[in-house]
Length: 611
Image 1 (cartoon, one colour):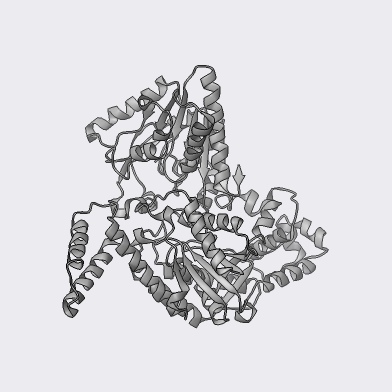
Image 2: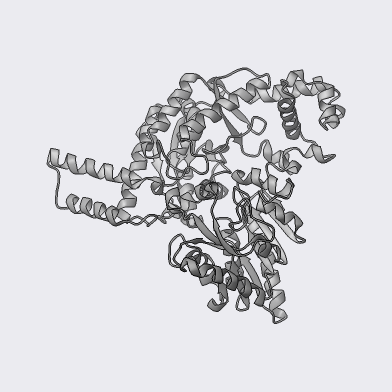
């Protein structure tokens, strides 16, 4: 199943589980669920909680077995799956504690082998798993079955892959804090479940999803073993499905219903695989690559090439073709996404005399290293002495903050004082960054949305308070254009949640609806075919943009949560913006030094997917 949004997937899976629980309850039997952790299944658990509260779904007969747990890991750790499951699911429904099974990460090493055998035995005595929820890691692991796992493997202690540990770094506030080992159900145990749901969201999962679904079955990618399971359904949002043949090149599978957007996608793809510019493609190229239908629709390759070339060149918008005199809000999820992803167009819109406001949706305070705080505290203490402004309130605050940091454990939630200091660090960096682009400090608005204020990587759901803050700003500013992070690859999900808050506020907004431009985050860029606006940047303009990114010193050299890509953000930006320009050049369009790409809501990919 492919759905545009994750919520639709969560509702479908939760509905299937609810149906199964009710069916087995009526028969007086237990329902045995295999459960996963992480951000992927949280929406499923929230929907099951809703079923319990609003529709009296009875969990008293449900038995659960979790897939895995880090080792070593205490049951009450903030990072452990015991605490995660109780906080996000178990304590909200009438599940019997004796029916909950989670691998123990707090046992001595010499007891683990027996514990794993007992876990397998408990699953068997419960009658086997009726419904298993799975996510997929970027190595293709299911559970923690890393590359090399055999199809018959059982519950055991495993060593985690380096990529897996990097992907988990955000939850542990640094890769160095991620355990090296974990206990996991084996592939063989998972495949014995009677029904399996594999769930994946986000563009950062697209490549491994394609390998798992379309690749050969291999011990190098444990998820490929699911192809041999008799009752597995793969649930994907549009971003995670992006690399599947049926989505990326559906014409390769047979006849399709063509749209103009799909034609552009196909011609750009054909240009890439043949190495020819658009206007040099000929009839043979189309016929040899399963695109003869386009020749029938358009009469000849020359006619179609001309149409697509004109469509592509119309996307290019230099400063003279961008709006002027408009009211514009750029919503930035974190205090650096504006300059990282849209610094070029932000500067051009300001230069064109638009009334621009940059609205930072979250404080980004959890992404500040503790050593940055210590540096600022030392600065305040020294300057207080230099200028004699130390007082009875300042000295205890400095001592309290320094003492907390001295005794703080890795991954421990910061005190309110430290969180506030980290928030202010991000704010002054953000102001310095937009000033580098020519904007003024008063053009920055820090919204500090409540959903983010947990002090932890995992956030609360978007609530009415978050939406109201966005709505109040829309009513106050009456924007004609809003720029929103349409990023689908953000590994922590904050970007997607911030977009949800804007979408919900726009749905309630009573004024004239603004035009919505979607930019991408630090992980991916819109393709030339998918983009609606291609904004050229000169070498000097890219240099200024990178200079603005440099102002975010707390994220410089080593970002706290870089994802799997460990390059600095400015390096990713430079490569990404220059590669977009190189693609435009290869297509035979005018040559530029670099380019930013944006989507306009309702144009392009939405039309393509609707076919």
